Length: 232
Ligand code: GTP
Image (cartoon, rainbow, N blue to C red; front, side, top):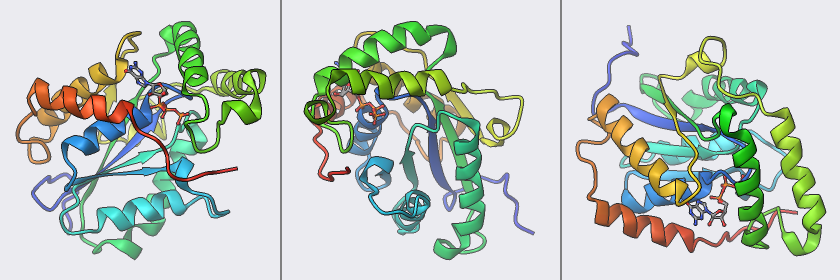
């Protein structure tokens, strides 16, 4: 029998965020992949343009199947339970199309938007997304206008179903990292917390935490990130 609890050097990891728009998922993910370019990958839902929504997990598994790859961040908001459930269902259904049947996968959740900070999150993310301007695959300020962008973001905030660790699907994560939300350089703080918690839970994935200088450099680089795909 396969012992799914066992974590060893063959174990692979997926990260599913729980978030609303503009909380810094992409910036945080880019910082992490800048730190571990060979072993960590990042697939963005915003880069997927076709009709088949499960391409998100297919591309993630395809990347994770590469021998050197250890951890792939599946970058989507997943702000509702049904989206989180869908990711677990796709994973179950599609895993063996990409990875050997006995590959052990651990799923790490990252909650970006604590419910008690939602009004602050609203203010800061709206400012940030307006400032981001056209520098996004689908939310382009010049084309949509400020009012529409605010409308899209408000919709996410209204529908948001925060982490509920006591019930399905949120009780299916192997590890849950609950981030706080700080105004200044929240993604830098996020990355440091993520590195610490993964190091503690899965030292095999992260035997050593990178130095603060390395983290700062990776973060600065990620703030300059510009998407390459255009999604209408
Ligand atoms: P969506 O994909 O639209 O849901 O957004 P996201 O959650 O991926 O957020 P993203 O990383 O794109 O961040 C939104 C904007 O805020 C971008 O312009 C980032 O450069 C900026 N940003 C993110 N984190 C930080 C931070 O810690 N400090 C500063 N100064 N800007 C940040």
